[in-house]
Image 1 (cartoon, rainbow, N blue to C red):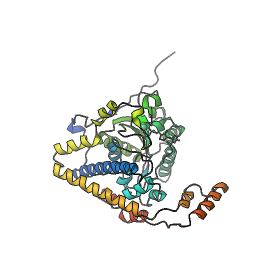
Image 2 (cartoon, protein in one colour):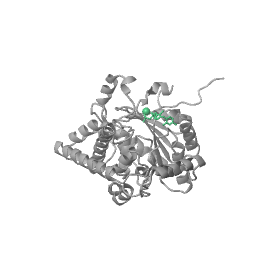
Image 3 (spheres, protein in one colour):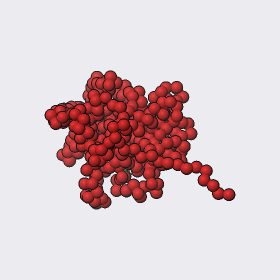
Image 4 (cartoon, rainbow, N blue to C red):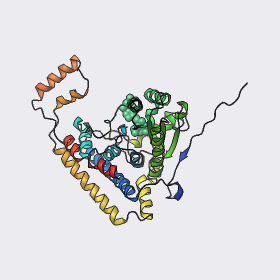
Length: 380
Ligand SMILES: Cc1ncc(C[n+]2csc(CCOP(=O)(O)OP(=O)(O)O)c2C)c(N)n1
Ligand SMILES: [Mg+2]
């Protein structure tokens, strides 16, 4: 006997399409004030990203991973969360850090090689950048399991790329999350490329969203360049998780407009035409046109928001660059609880060679004082 024992569907969500069309009834309920804030964060993120790229080219930052084009994935999802929800970012989530209240000067310091940039003030619920692809997914599920065990209503949210879905960590995390109905939201920013590997060589699955089905929970693909879709899908996933209904996988279908990092040259493996086509779907322009159409913003306000963002980012660069340099020996402090003997030896050598040992002062303390952004969002 042969019969069909299960059928599955993979939903796709798009609310504001690339031509600016939408159906009023599909729009999520967001106050005008919050729509403006979302727009401001998208602009701030783009200005930060452009500046970071230029600083790297001037030799003032180390390798940097641009996020241009992925702003709706980040701002749309982060806005659906509450302060106590815990975020596990990958390495391209500068927008998420800033929305949680991590100051841009901290991020500049991190990307300039100063580990203190990732000393997140304890009241900001975000883990440090995970350069190691996929390794943070099991941690996010563990945190979600802890929330459930402690009967707290918080959720954990983990961001990762399409490339991370080939890692064992992804599958282990998804399996645990499904079995234990953990309040964990998996957000895959499918930007079509993992360095030079296109998504069709990454997986034989038609979508990434459908991978959730194998682990017994819902997966949805959304237009990742449409802020409204990302916000709505994340809000629904968060509501399910808080009700004890378990995890969700959200695949944000988007595009990495820049190179993989400043060490990459994407012209060697993808056509400029492909990039130009995706530029037409720019998430910021799409949202901006919607806000203009609804008269929530106007050209004068756009100009003001842009110039204020530029001034804020310039200030952040000055603060980051005026901080006392980190002692080279400090890099040993972030490796292990107890250093191995060969690392101890290297640390001693480094100490001998670098007599000046600086104190841990600067941006991290300022961030504690100034984490006003989080406060503002709470009130919103
Ligand atoms: C475990 C591990 N393997 C390999 C790498 C090298 N590496 C850095 S980024 C990257 C590709 C990641 O692609 P994706 O997950 O799609 O994220 P995206 O860069 O598109 O944001 C690779 C293979 C790494 N950092 N960690
Ligand atoms: Mg990718």
